[in-house]
Amino acid sequence: MLIQRAKLLGGSTVDIRLHQQIVEVAPQLTPTTGEPVLDAAHRTVIPGLHDHHVHLHSAAAALSSVRVGPREVAGHDDLAAVLAGATPGEDGWIRAIGYHEAVAGPLDRTALDGVSPATPVRVQHRSGVLWTLNTAGLVRVGLADHPDGRLRSADSSWSSALQRRETGLAELSRRLASLGVTGVTDATPNLTIDDVVKFAEAHQHGELLQRVHCLAPGKRILHDDALDLDDLEAWIGARHGAGGPVAVHCVTAAQLVVTIAALRSVGTMPGDRIEHAAVVPEDCLTDLAELGVTVVTQPNFVCERGDQYLADVDVDEHPQLWRLASLQAANVGVALSTDMPFGDADPWAAMRAAVHRRTASGTVLGSGEAVAARTALELFFGSAEQPTRQRTIAPGQPADLCLIAADEPDLLAALEAGQIAATIVDGKVAYEAGR
Image 1 (spheres, rainbow, N blue to C red):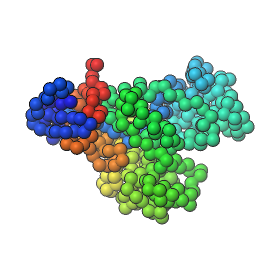
Image 2 (cartoon, rainbow, N blue to C red):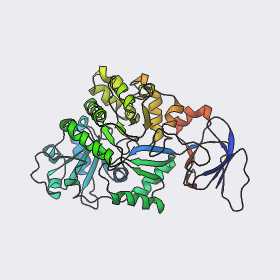
Image 3 (cartoon, helix red, strand yellow):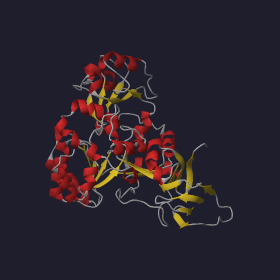
Image 4 (cartoon, rainbow, N blue to C red):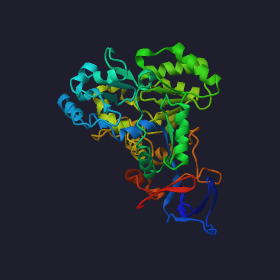
């Protein structure tokens, strides 16, 4: 296809010819016989956004799950009412997501039995790493005698007994296309080869519009109550020995410090990543730069969870939360993502949070970590396997583009509006506003 009158970041207006890659970029190109033409009408064309850390199956399942986070539920009685009014899915489960202790305190099987119906119920903590099952649910997965019903997401010894919800992927993909997302990196740690193949087939058949890159089996989630430096070193060494990079989930300072120690001991390789880096002590900035790892972080949580951080986190530690500008200043490679569905799937909201650093109530959290609008946008331009290597509008680049309804001088306004005119994947229109 041919895109005419497209404005590039930088101001020049060009025509762009696409196949599966960008073929030509010139001030003016003549359509060939039968070639589809899209008139950009002097709107800005950018590389399609790549969300560098998502969970596709969880996000698809979230479309039909009950939300029980602090925004939706307030207190014990409200939680009970929401669960009582929920309809079990085809698998017989009530699946609830987004729980935080601010709703009704710590949750275990006893507390959940007190607010849940007699049907199987599983409630996911908003961190995504923990599920709490009621007694009926524990019986269903063969763990009737489990002491507290608190089960880790990555533990296949119980999750393999669940029936995966396959619906919702196409709907999710269409929404992502409407946001300008042309590719995603799935960071789910326990994906199998079959899962990866199914994603590829879904993309080939058009159900999944975005390109998908998977971190598994190179993704590892850490837990503060089970940090083991020797075990982490052995895992990293084995992954590197097999020729694969690692991606380590670090949401606390302790997890980050142990990961840095393990990488210093074993060594790093190109592609090694730190996921989240939610808390980065000042003295870790130099360590991350020296190791040469990429940090994939989510500034959207400043907006989505910032007010809870203000209440729960010591004020002296606020500057360590969801760093961005200081990582770049220290020459640490950074890419942005949303952590969908644990964060809002809208990458433009993540960009706005990176620029403004405002919580939902309007309080600024970590003003020194704010970046310019152009910087926030470009941190979604990275390629799947090289998140810090930005894609451009040039011959030989992937034909994954996004047409936004704003000019570069109004880029901040574009971030505020998040308005997408068209999204192109593999040289074909995946989304066009009004159609």
